[in-house]
Length: 178
Image 1: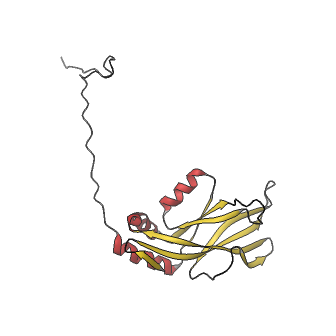
Image 2: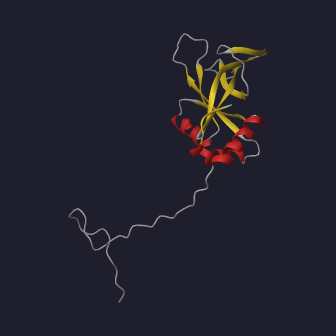
């Protein structure tokens, strides 16, 4: 784990992806991230780590988990879960000749960031369990950098119903009590 400066911290995490035989008629295999590991080994991408009947697991890549002090609200919410989560994003590979149709793109501890990637619908976004040392590091980061922001209710603009806009008849008419 290392810090860029006092506002940001970077933690390298190994991304474990599982390739599993599919029962679906249109797909032979399913691919999904299943874990993130601390202190990942220095290996080539897509290093096979275990193979079983109908599945293979790979150390697919080492990605950087970046924590920024402006995102502590999302980190704090994640730490409040019974089991804190990391979110791993797989993106379609640009190398059409590759044996691996996806590339690990991002790991984040922010559900807000993960939601942004699911909205597009092109990526695979999966929750994986957050390792305990990462949760402890994030907790310390949040304690150091989180600033509770006070909610300020915005005042509504007052509508002048007498004023006519755009040369049209008034949209609202005032009712007078008789």
